[in-house]
Image 1 (spheres, rainbow over the protein chains, first blue to last red):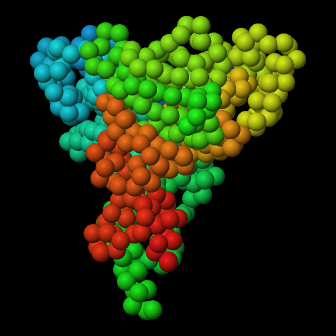
Image 2: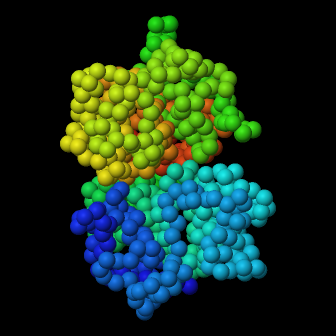
Image 3: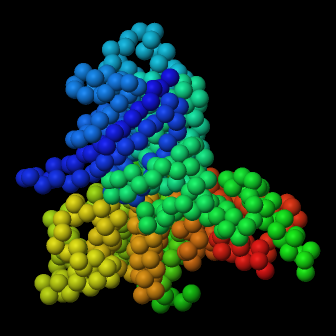
Length: 288
Length: 278
């Protein structure tokens, strides 16, 4: 079970050579509650990948503080300890697959953490089951013989085998087709539900994270502009276009309907949208 | 179509291709005609053969069987390689893998320099390409310091400077945010209006609705081909090809179940709303 992860006024800059620095994130304060599914959304270059690395302890804040539970993450030993609680799936993680079997690839992380024998085997089995890879494939198949979607899930299994309490994913759905995205989303939610993990999905595309996330943190130019629910996003509480993003197509439709005073029970459900439109059409017809 | 038109089209006939070491063909018997001044969106699930087809169009990959004729040039003829490369330019998903120059200007000049053009002609082409793409103000910047979207624009400017007849975009928008994607799509439209043929490989069905024609590949074969309405209007059919149907088409399908026939195939929110308020 995850603990609360809290960022307090966190900033980070990349050195540009000489004395110059490129600020990537500045003054970010937020909490990720245990079991939260948070989407951090922003345009390319908004600083969201940097934030993902700060949230998993791969980058240390230049200023501000990071807390996991009651404990402040400061100094090498607490950082190393925190890294065991947090896992990051990098963008295009299949580029980092390297072993000659799927099993060895998934086992790489936990083995590095010193696990051996039955515990290591259990971790690999559990992680493979969570992402829906068949056990028969593990020992015999090369990760490079898997499809794009399977490779992405194999890479995710490698992170899940570390059993992170806080799982951060950088653009996990990019480049995947419909089946690949659906399979990955199911794996994520299985892990979330079974382990009570907190999940942070970093993306520039709201549509894929929409059905998974309970809250959306909007990032622009290194700052966390706002944290809102999907309902608030649909209601138009944020100017997404100015943040370089857009609502998914059904969201744009739902917003238009709601703005015209047409009630929609569940905007993410096509039959609900259709029902609302049919009702309106019938009412218009009756009034003619 | 008359014989003379072959000089400005790409004709793909019975194209098959199998990667070395693979037993499964990546493309099988693909027939396709690409025309100047038109945009063709190429869709399909991962591994369906989209990128392989894109690479066959400019001779990066040569047909295993069948034939690709780019602007009248058989891509399989070694003597045609340079001319094919001039006429059919490509941009890829990740611009980082394509950028080599230390300034944007140098980057855009790279292609024309390789053609051995006179210095004045190179200068003129670079200026024109930067202007066309709308990045003149970036000309002295370092490409690798730019945003992903800007880098992709630089890669396209490099392609435009070759004055190609066709531009093949292999998922050039897939890593970009919405704002950057819109800019690229607007640019494609501008190039198309100027007479260039555009082939755009994409995962985004909303982008494909803007094209003149859509080709959907499945297991290396053409599974559907036609206008966006013909190919993307039926959500069941779209799903069967491994694609995520447009939300609007799913809603229209649900409306039909409720006894409301939405006339014609709607693809956009605007079209569905005009039906509602008609």
